[in-house]
Image (cartoon, rainbow, N blue to C red):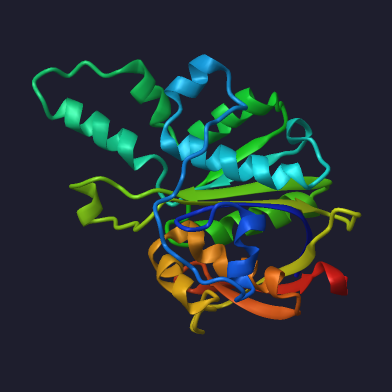
Length: 268
């Protein structure tokens, strides 16, 4: 079992315009209304990079910036982990569309944005970070894989890491074989020790698959959890918002699940 302390959270999704703004929804004090996500301007980036940044990068940077706003840590000094089930499908679609046509000259910007670690690159430009950055993918289990990687890095001596998980829909015809319903991004600043900024504690451990993954709360968020890999985090967010200790099961691999024991800040 690995213990992590949550110091900051960022959130962007349909009808979820930030962690603080979404707390009444998780607490059941406000009804969830699904509406198109708002992609904020990426003020952290210089103008040239801002123009080139795809929506995936805007989503990842918005979630990460919000998580650091309350953590008391510097993003430039914190190792980062980026988790996505498939990267930037819009860019891949554009490249394939070009290659399938008669004019096969690829845009250098498209090629630059096609790599899986593109969000990590823009993040380092935006924050000035020279700390290690990890980009990973584990299909529908990518969020759980990101948590495991965060736990491994903290166990290996990192004082804190930021985990940023994100997914966006694929355009057709790719969407026919890989369906992701909505854009969604989440970020956690996770530390090895508690601090004044700690909002909760999570203990993670691998367990055999076979159980039913924990549903999202409120129930109106469950379709989002099921249809977007990065949104598998929703039960953890609900547990942190509820203010009560709870156990959450996340789907990971075919033969493994990830159990997350959540203790909100007031009980640490």
